[in-house]
Length: 492
Image (cartoon, rainbow, N blue to C red; front, top):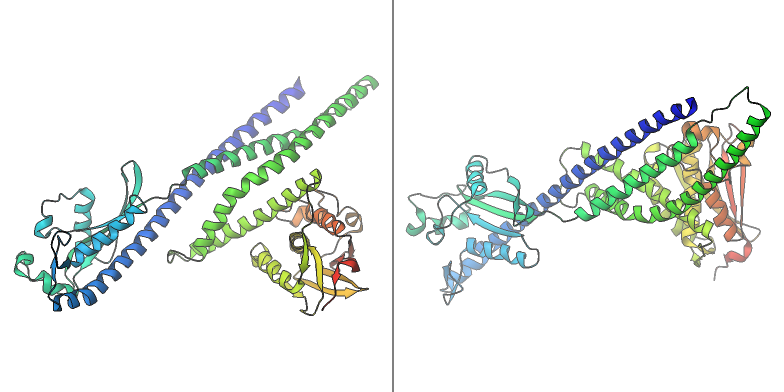
């Protein structure tokens, strides 16, 4: 009874803790995603606004003078009046509103506290009145607000309309002057862009559900393994037999959990790739500043961290998928003739986008273009190199990794060498074991699963090759992959 009570309370605490973590994750992710939506909409509106200004300037400076010189008049009602073209402001609004045919809710409009006669009956709403008051004082800063319009969150982006030289003459006509003498640089009104926020809420909810389920199941499986068994030192022979029976039952349960884990990882890895691709895609857009500068330089550092973490998680998910396919016997090779120098360029780019990019470790490769081609599965060969490199990054504690390829006895040999602490003899015999991590790994590794080298061994074996390890403590480690000569494609 005492043993049962000692286990129940920690279980309740762990479940409560995991629930709080999941809740905080969901709230933080929801806030971040919605903030990102506003940023995307803001950059879209800013680009749209700049485009309209460019179009209007071209129309005012090029089209209007040619038309007036040809005797064509300007009109706000040009649809109903023959031999007329629209005023620049009318033209701008009509161009902006054309976009709503493609994206509902995306449009542009102009308004002013001194509107033209044909627009004086238009009533300004609260946002429009506030934008006029704000921009008349601060014309260099946009006035932005997110509001619900027709049941959908919409960003309203307002910028000041400043009179230019091409505009002053028309605005100073008696019927448009309104008691003013307009000059270049005067605030004339407001140009507003409405942009509906991106609708990706369904994907967000799916991400929360998958992540929450994964964390909960992992916690339960981990709890069942971590909880210590209470061993009675004064047990009799009968108690020992009972304990043996209990351990056998527990082993069967762990075996069942292991099988359930394998099925779970295979399915969950597939499901995680969809939100992960979204994270990598959005972070890559932010890294490249697709919609304009981010502002504070600190954001670039955070975004790089998000992208590196996403890339690292992507590699881990691919490893889990490969492990699941191997266990199910569903990993056939798709072979082609591979030029190793080209493959190395791809692998180097990918590994530098993960931890190695900030680890301070030097990575060099020697893959001469004169090497013969290798008949192999391109993806499997990439995984061999990536896992060997990442293994060296995570476990070697060294400063340099060298990768090279050459031909020995007619077969291609690839070596991945580091100058780190080396591998203990008792660890070398277990390196191919799944989920095995040596003592140094437990102390120094960040994020390894312990399956990278076992996958390398399987991929190499599928190609009929061999994996060798040469190391001694304090003198670095070398992983040598040898392919049979039958896979070497002679140069023609």
